[in-house]
Each structure stands twice: as structure tokens, then as C-alpha cells.
Length: 411
Image (cartoon, rainbow, N blue to C red; front, side, top):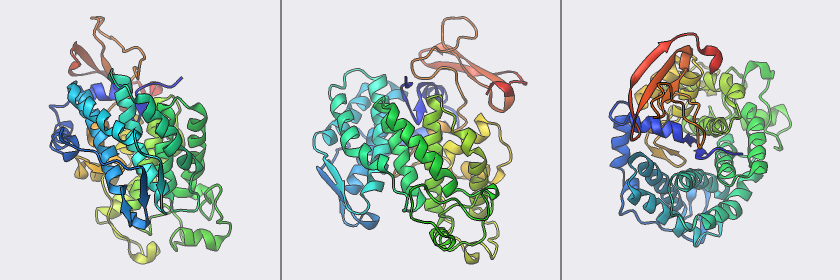
């Protein structure tokens, strides 16, 4: 059984956000969301039957429109849950219904990636609306389009492309699988993720060369070096796209974190597999982005420092949930970049994931009530200290109360 809502964000996480909208860093992130065109009730969707996307979305026949509309649907779904103003739920539904009425296919060379970008946002929006709002009569039609138009190319993968493609596609695939209660597709997405992870982030324990993506045609040392954009020396945390640019690298790392986060909500611990690679990669790239010296052996001594707001989900899991304090540069970059806004398949992640602890209650499961007053409470055991926020009713919570240390074995 899948837990709902459970695509990237859980009900418990969003309840925590609601309780902290007046505090930083959520306050600034919330203000940004509310002031965004994506959150406007006058937003109008622009659906089409065939979304045709060439290289770098050129031609752009519906590509930008679909990405924007999927982000608007997710933005309105978040605004609905955080305000309980049904107008935002209805706007999210209006956008999704407009697309499910007409979309039939994605074409062009960028179609798989486009499907990933839009599918990731649409699955998050649909998941929130279906499981927190009553009255979406066309939910089944939208789910049908996720199954027939979006999921097949995503599940097929793209092993020979730059790694961010297949990782973003897997992010969308696992989200759609959860929304559809499709265990087979969920398991296939996890398998793709497990194979792609060591083919995207290198650790010295891998050997002298990075792993090849499962299913790819890269079989020789020369082919793998070429795939890694000419890099010949490999160190912990280097990625397949480091020598391409940091922007696409950030996308790959964000997608790795997204898949692990969705799996976490479903009781599957992928962070246990990814944590060392993610830590090394995030800190390496953040250090260079913040002005660190680029050694001559790395990318010919020159990197493209265009890292974006890509680390919030992964940083929260590693630092706040798992308690790792050995990623100082990643911490500096995340805090310097806040509040994270929107980009393609990334939306409002400071709002949804900053300092957001781990909870017992997710989806429809029971909510803890530590003070036995009949009102659900929140708790975190991040970094080994048990902290409780006692519920006051109406989705309001009291101040944090630190109970004490010694809780590391329980998270």
C-alpha cells in the first residue's frame, strides 16, 4: 500500500510548513510563492494535443507552456493546502483538466526530458489535490493520461543521454507510480535509480573508472571518459556532468534527492544508498561554486559555475534528518540561495523542505499526540535530539520543545 499524499512532500511535512509560515526561512519562501504568476487565480492554461520539443526546446510547440502549466498546477495545489482556500484547489484542477482533455503525445528530440519535467510537477499536483481535496470529478481522466501519455517513455529510460535526463525522468516516473498505486512501475523506477546513481556520482570505491549506465552502449575506457566530458581523473563526488556545467549537474543531484524523498515517504530508504555520494557531490560543487580553486586536473582547470537552487531536498535529508555535519559548503550554498523558487521540475523547495524534520505520521497514518490532549503533535529526532511541537488545533502548533539527546538510534 502506498501512503498518500506521498509524492515528494507528505501531509506531515506540509502541516509543519503551515505551522511555520510566519517564521524564516518559510516566511520569505511563502511570500515568493504567493506573489508568483504561477499562484495567480487568473492563470490560464494553454494545453495542446502534441507537445513538440526539439533540442533545447527548439522548436517550442507547447514545451514552455506545458512546463509552466504543470508548475502552476503544483503551485496552486500547495497554496490550497497551506491556506485551505478552495479557490486554489479548483484552479489546480482547472489546469490539470485542461491538459487531460487534449494531451496525446510528446514528440521531438527533447520529448523524454520534457515528459519528465512536466510529469514530475503534474504528479505532485495531482497527488496533493486527489488526497487532500474533495470534488475533482476528472481525477480519473488525468490519472489515465499520466499512465498512457507520460509514464511509458519515462519508464523506458534514456541510458545514453547525459545523466540528468534519466534521473529527471525517473523522478517523474516514481511520482506517477505512487499516484497511480502502481507498484511495478515504482519498483522499476527504483531499479533505474539504483543503476544510474553510481553512473552519475563517482566514489573511489567504484574503481579507477566510473560505472557505465545500465543499458548504455558505453563499454570502453575511452567511451566512458568521453561520456564524462573528457575528465580522466576521478575523485569522490565528481559527477558525469561536472565538466559540462554545474546547472545540469545540480539538476541531476536534485532528481536523485527527489526520488529518494518520494521513496522515503513510501518506507523505502534510498538515502542509505545515496548518502555518501550525495554528500561528496553536493559539498564539492558548492565549494567550487562559492569560489574555491579549480585544480588543473579538473575539467582542464575551468568549470562553469552556474549552480542553482538545487540542493534543498537533499541537504535537508542529509543534514537535518540524518544529522551529517560534514557538508559545510553545501550548507553555505543552500542558505545563501534561499528562498528557492521555480525552475522546470523544481518548485518552492525551501518552503516545502527547509529544516523539515522526520515524522511518524504520513499520509493517512496516525498522528502522534504526546500531551494526550486529543490534538496531533509533530516531532523530530534530527541529529539525535527529540524535539516536539504540540498541536493547538486548526493546524497550528506551539513552539519547539527540546526533550533531550540520545535519540540517534530512532531515526
